[in-house]
Length: 128
Image 1 (spheres, rainbow, N blue to C red):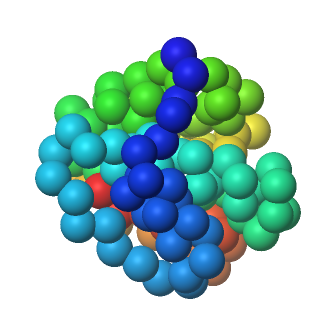
Image 2: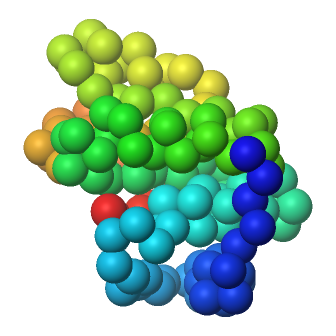
């Protein structure tokens, strides 16, 4: 599907790209995920400022929303997502996938920090 951002979405995407730290306070259904994924794509493939992004989300959102949004929009088709979910072995395997965006649920953040320790590979962290 072709993404034609509303003016507020284009504004938010631009701000995510320009600001080192920002929060998007938008209601459900207004496109925070596609805005953020669009910004990540541009930061990685156009500006070369991000190598890997980490998205921390509630479990149900981590399981479906982020990957569904990436699959839904034409301009995001090349963006590679890895869901760091499931058993410890599944999470470790997901971390070893060559991806642009890694999506993890909130309950596994402590595990992730302990697992990676000082070898933090993420240039960008998104908290959903």
